[in-house]
Image (cartoon, rainbow, N blue to C red; front, side, top):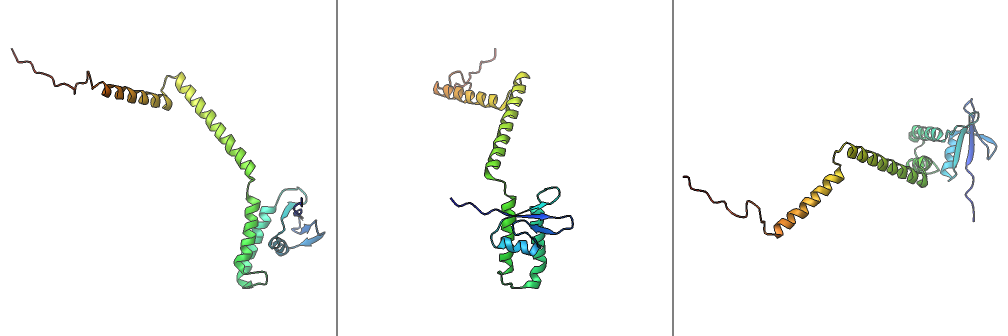
Length: 169
């Protein structure tokens, strides 16, 4: 099974120079943009601290491309909107959270909401305050009783028989 090629690891030095460890040479933002347009993945890290600077660098590339777009007009590597789209797609890919992580976060959030609901319901029960569930259960019971009364013909209902008036003495 073929493996995806390793991303270009770019180290950023304190003097703002960028060094591509894969090709063992210094590169510019434009050269990194060309790598991206060529379908290569990149990762930019601070040489001293190891902090990931990919997002910052991609933002700089997009900004630089936007500034240069009016000057370039139509370049050999495609219309300006296509060049920008390639860069924006790379930014989106690097910003996307893996689906598995997103699913785990959503599950934990749901678990926490469930725990909070249980705690609130328990507190309401201790305070003898009816919960939403209690009120729903009572409403269903009232519906059942109301239906049973209608089946019995409304016996005992004040609207079922008119009252007679007694004559005054």
